[in-house]
Image (tube, rainbow, N blue to C red; front, top):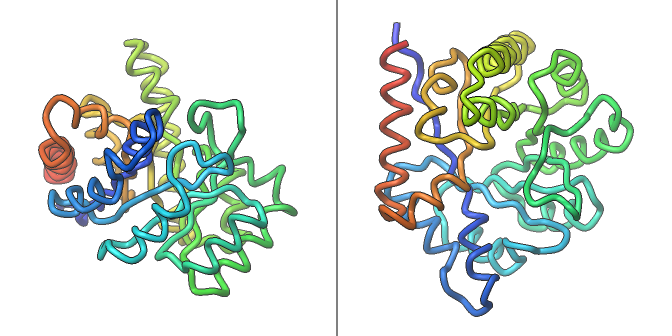
Length: 250
């Protein structure tokens, strides 16, 4: 039986990275969000970092005002970011780990170790009517704690799987993929909506897209890179096509 349609969230952070490398207003991440919407994206993801290295507060203002698709605001669990989220009330907030020295998110949020710190953020965002997601590793302990915190959604970190596939490490790729499969089943059994993302490419997306009960993939860096060569509309359309094909072949 064919699986339910899989949503695609397009992360536009690295359009802003290119813009900020030189300053000014070009390229415009909001324009990229609009093109993604026209090309089949179901939502837009943007990570407002503490250091504002890519997405800025003005970008979030404009995304909320100009984009019809649901906005998934990625943020660290800090008082500043909580205030911003409560002011804007995006469709969803995904709480992610954040370190100043990292180039990009290096792994999932350790919600087990950080329970006492993170739980109040989950509660306050949920009370404001914002759908809360936690970006975690596909680990049963992390998934159980996410459920206990009251998160509606978990987003499973696919970065390690994608890196192993890039190295052509067949055994490690298979092992890490199995963890994603098991984590998805665990999250679904606990009543959580399961998303996945980080590092996904045309070569790695289909196995993940075919996993039963994954509801959404969030993909950014690869699509923005491909847009340099083929344009954002074609990059998004191609990714959407691979996801649809994977679900149809399940």
